[in-house]
Image (cartoon, rainbow, N blue to C red; front, side, top):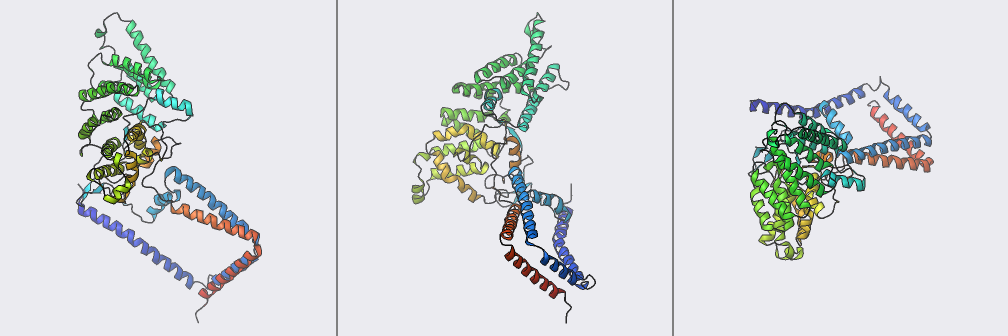
Length: 547
């Protein structure tokens, strides 16, 4: 354990060195000026300045046109590059290079001491949880690749999933669906290779390879299935059917048929370990198939049974699937019962939890809500609760309202989301926009109140109100998860970097000088000579010997 006193002394020493460096530079600059003034005669500075002035006076206007035009072109190219870099990465290239390479040389010290701290309600500083702010989660409502994502690609020619997102899914499948034993079985190796394949057709061929191996093995034995369960792991064949249902099935009906086939293999034995994960995955996807095919009550029953059978698998967020299905049934009392269990201070939050809670409270008052009447008489208790719930939801994820209010176009949700990020907002709005529209006046109440959240948290990256400060790493992670044709929502909105404004001003100024010099060469020549003579006179005055 490090000594806090020595650590505090080291921090004070670093801050003192950083503070004193400015004054050291100022003293050094003053010494240089003094040295130049003392050595002005040996260095013949006055003669050099006079010669330079004479040379400038002999230059033609064409030279100044070429000079200013070249300066304008170079600054324009820098401006275009800076703007492109800022749009793509959200920061200035020149500032990034300066901070990364020049600041350490100048003695700058990055202030990371508060990265793991947050302010509590009583103003004291407490340690933040060690869980990463920008952890990527599996999207509980992710679509089917073959039946939904691929159909989008066929129609639009655009890829809705990024390689980073698909690679995370492959890692999930390898982690959850392969055997617990240290030595992989042959069928495990086939499936691991299938999940790793980047080409969808290669993954499908690997799944068929495992199915053929299973069929040949089954035909070669004339004993009861129960007698060779220990010889061959039928769960691997279930994994092959899962892959085919996700990748090859072009309709939800076909995907449901393949998942039922996988479930038939998966329920032959009493699964343990990662085979349980595979079984839970199959049942969950079957419930989602039933939801998409309109059998919503059946889907709700399957989800409830799954949560009751596997209560320890709360990290899979099956309750979010249940909430969406219950909202479709307009069973708002059941939705409130689920929220009462999962909207707890000790449990991790999500956009689904926060915005569903806000929707229920807004629904109770939104049909009679009027901004004009509320401004005259003030907000009632129920309206105040609804507004506070909206502010809470917006603080957790500020990207959602623009999608719900259709101020921003929706895309297909990714297979993984970043909590409090734009990817989570896309996933939530894609499935829940219809529920907000169904509640009369709810979107109007959201439209009138959601921006008031930002007055409560003027500095969201430094201090939050009901949640931790907003993480600053969401933009980078969302750009990896969302396709390139989607404009990633950034919060808080970044101002244009200084160097973009500087290069824009420089480009405009030099372009204007080039145009004026080209159009009015005589007038600009007189102006340049006047400026040159004025500067020469001042320099001569500075370096002339004192009388």
